[in-house]
Length: 472
Ligand code: BES
Ligand code: ZN
Image 1 (tube, helix red, strand yellow):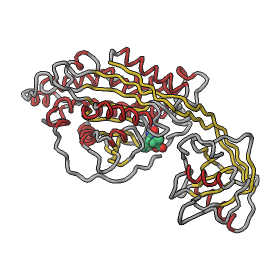
Image 2: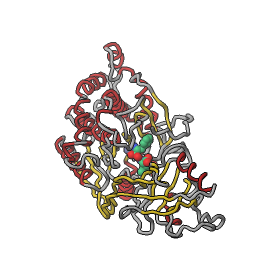
Image 3: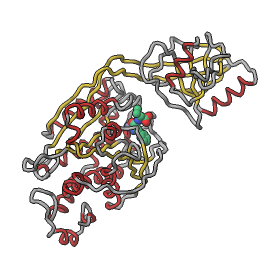
Image 4: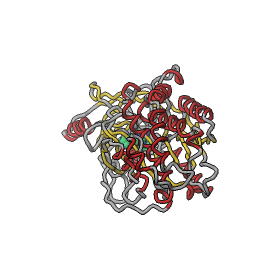
């Protein structure tokens, strides 16, 4: 059946579609286009924008406006409760699962001066703060390696000094650990590619002191001066707010399949609701608010009664500190044996800003069947498709690792990503509309063609672009 009849249906194609009926309980056949245009009419982008606003500023946050929903902090917990309340209001089967051992971290800014001149630096996540400032000579320590082959600290005296280290080869954490073990009082890691480096040390750790990133351009110029024998007196100030051993939540709301459907499988629609230390309107109040609206639309009795899949919405916490929420959720699915009942996963992350819709999978070897459905929906709705890329930077990744076919849908690119400028006014209602339509179309499509779409799908043999998308 030609899918063009969907959502933007015209009367003629609805007539053509009419004689084709799969099962009485499916959306297929005469009803399909009617239901879809009804959903289209009911879809309220305004409601979604309001929720983005609510999640990224005032109402929930009061005096904590700049740190909307930082993992492990109050704003994130309030957001979790808000989402749970919304799912409950819709009559979904809800559950809130606590994620333990979360170290909350807020960057409150870092400054650096070299011979009295300011240079822009960026606090590494989980860096320690300074009491006041630390001051010392700047020392170049190469890539900061200590291994069987290389010791970048062999000929350098770092005692009481600040290490300047180039990005690459080993983790930021390892570089910092090595430098502090060699007596450094501060560490600056500069980029190997143009621009600033935005990194994490992975965990709170007393053995690593204040650690910041620096742009390649500034780092290169400092290294040149050091190599020419110049002495560079450096000061470093790092302010952080930490909340060790806090927690986060995964919030689950499910619309069960119609009780006539035999052994229904489950489709997961996910979005993370935590943020880094910024309003996080696009990343990812946009995806969160969109799944709330989709839950509202799909939970109406008229739709619900025709679902051949359980549709499970999962709002993930603790994404920004390493996909902790989705990782734990998938581990629970695997442990309970439920993973094999998950037909597919659709992840919405950053769907409000940018030029066009893009899709991602973890890598070329992961199952692309949900991605193929997404791509087909985007194209059939007449939206511009920005292409397919590889990324492991969002909540689809643990699902794909567990062998669950998934897709990460996004608008790309967002110039305000992880900055204070990630505010609701940047969100384009058109993007929200298109994303919602794509997911509705995908769900209808999967539901209509249960037999050939997700159950026994024939893997499409096609070559995917194996590249990571530029972020900004
Ligand atoms: N939404 C981003 C991921 C993203 C941004 C993907 C831009 C593609 C383009 C996500 O919230 C994020 O920031 N993830 C972290 C990685 C994660 C494993 C901690 C990131 O990309 O730094
Ligand atoms: Zn995100």
